[in-house]
Image (cartoon, rainbow, N blue to C red; front, side, top):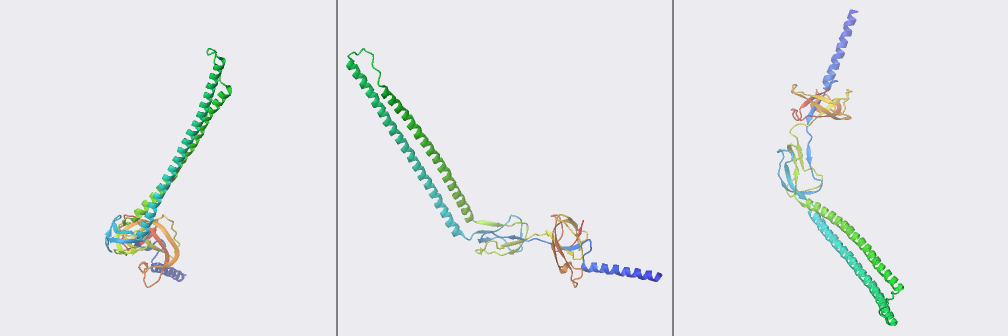
Length: 336
């Protein structure tokens, strides 16, 4: 019975030793995994085709965010110039139409004023004629009566009513013409607003085109060193083409691998403890960004034994700005 217990204990030790060997071979324990510090290359490009005029940097040069990398212009300069000329003609056309419309409406107002003056003058002449007829009739009555001291006979009531009607018609003509003038003045203001808006839009479009015709610069998006320069002076580059690649001078993230046998789950924003494998005293905390559910083969650098293949799930950890890891340094990661 004693021999059986000893053998049983020995087998337990063997199984435990084999398990530890498996963990060492995979290079990843249940509570930790490995990765390497990497950089995210910044690519400089243009949203439209450009002509390179002057290049101010070269590969391997250190740059800071906001530094000028190159001078360039739009490659479709002739097309932009044609569009600018079209917009200039469009603005002149709108201005001419606006002026013509103003003259046309002003002439209509002048015609209304002339029509008003003519109508009022005609009615006034009729009133004057009726008043003269009343005066003549009164004088005739005086002569017929032969007595100048007699009270003057009142003028004809019919003529007086006609005079009142004509006087009222003068006011009516004046009101009608004034109403038509108000409508024309409103039309003048509306036309001014419409044409001014059209002219403003065309001028804005012309300004944008002229701005595109100007020389502009390519700017470094971040601090780092120039990895590649794919531009030379007098070269035409198509839109969205990679022009310059800039790599940061220090890692920005850790690319790690969870062993395929592990069941470690991390959520976005979780804190991950990071240790340098080569410099164990150097450590910091990172933030879990994302993970790839697909299993892939581990890079040789992250294997414990390069001769033995291992597989795992890819994950990415964001590094803080204060870290002191080297680019490509092997990192051990432990979720908190």
